[in-house]
Amino acid sequence: MLFVADSAKDKIHEIKSSSGLGEEYFVRVSVTSGGCSGLSYQLDFDNENQENDQVFEDNGVTVVTDLKSFLYLCNTTLEFSGGLNGKGFAFNNPNASRTCGCGESFAV
Image (cartoon, rainbow, N blue to C red; front, side, top):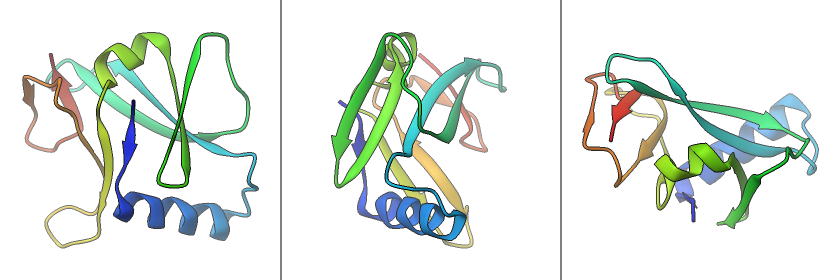
């Protein structure tokens, strides 16, 4: 399962509304190679499912990930911080053994 915190839910709905994205759009989360810790998160809006997609609904938000990325993301919570110490989406990933200082990459 992938989870969506209230802070992320509110920001996702705000972005979809201001960008004119319809209800058919969902959040696609994936993990790619790169970053200073070895793996990086990628977050996009999409409206087309791919083969082997894993689809989750939490807190009124549909989150989709590919099967390979899900192995790294299982039980991760998507959060959003608007504070001075780091504005943007963040991943609270219990599978990560370490993260980089900027919080954009991780290792397992």
